[in-house]
Length: 371
Ligand SMILES: NC(=O)c1ccc[n+]([C@@H]2O[C@H](COP(=O)([O-])OP(=O)(O)OC[C@H]3O[C@@H](n4cnc5c(N)ncnc54)[C@H](O)[C@@H]3O)[C@@H](O)[C@H]2O)c1
Ligand SMILES: [Zn+2]
Image (cartoon, rainbow, N blue to C red; front, side, top):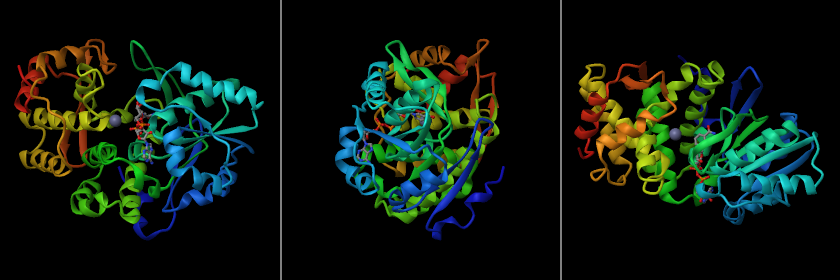
C-alpha cells in the first residue's frame, strides 16, 4: 500500500490527510499552531454552528487559553483518567448539553487525550441519536490513533471499552504544540504506537523515529508533525479501506494481542497502554522469527529501537501461562482461533490464525516472561 498524501509534508505548514469512510469523508489537519485556525477549519468541515467543547480540568489548565483565544470560552469539564472512563462521566456531558439546550445543529469538540475523545465522542454519538463531532487530541496517542477511525466508547466494570459505537468525526485537528506539556512517560507511550505504524506499514517511518529520536524527544514541532502526519496517513488509509475492522484494520492490532493481556493481568495499573504494546510487539517479532517469517536482523532492529526510547516496566514476574490464558478471552479470538498479526519485515505483516498456545508461551518466555 502507498500513502501518497505523506509526500513532501515536512516543510508544509498545514498537512491535510483525507479519511474516506463509507459513513463520512473527513480531513485530519495537522500543523504547528493550527489550533488558532480551529474556527475556520470547523466552518470548512461544515460542523454545525453551536459548538460545545468537552475537556478535562488538567488539559484546560494547560491549554484552555489557546481555546479561549480561538473563541471557545466555556468548556464542559469532566475528569479524564482511565478510571473515569465510564457512563456516569458521559452522563455529566449529557446533563450539560441538555442544560444548554444543545440541538441537532450542535457540534461537540473533544479537547483532551484518548479518554476525553472516546467518552465525549460517545456522548456525541448518542445524544439526540448523534450530533456532529470534532476531535482536537492533546496526547500523542490520541493524535496518531484514538482520534481517527470513529471508535468511541467507555469501559464497563467488567472490561475495557465494552460499551461503544462507531461515530466518525467531521474533522480532526492536530496541533503538535499541545504536546509540549505532556509528561514524558505519556509521550513515550504514544511513541510506541508510532513504532507500530512503522513496523506494520512504513520502513521510512520506522527509520525516521530512530534517526530523529533526539529532536522527537525535544518535541520539535516540525519533526513531530512529520511523524504524526505519517502515522495519521497510515491509520487513515487503513480505516478508509476497512471502517468496521473486518479485515485490513486488524493489522493495527500488531503487538496488541499480547499487549492487552499484559495490561489485563496487571489490572491496567503497571503499564501505559503503549508500553504494554511495546512488549507485545517484541513477543510477536520473536514468534515470527521462530516461524522463519521474519529475519532476525529485523527483529533486532525493532528490539533496539524500542530499547532506545527508554525503559519499560518489568515483565519478569508475569506468568506466560497466565498471559496465554488471558489471551484466550480476548476479542480477537474468533471460533476458538487466535487471530494474530505477525511481522514479516519492517513495514509488512501477515495475519495468521494458527498460533498454538504452547508456541505463544514459548515466545513469551524467550522475551522474559516467567514460566
Ligand atoms: N478510539 C480509538 O480508536 C482508540 C485508540 C487507542 C486508544 N484509545 C483509548 O484512548 C485512551 C488512552 O488515551 P491517552 O493515552 O491519550 O490517555 P488519557 O486521555 O488518559 O491522557 C493521559 C493523561 O495525559 C493528560 N493530558 C492530556 N493531554 C495533555 C497535555 N497536552 N499536556 C499534559 N497532560 C495532558 C490527561 O489529563 C491524562 O492524565 C484509552 O482509554 C484507550 O482505550 C482509543
Ligand atoms: Zn494501541
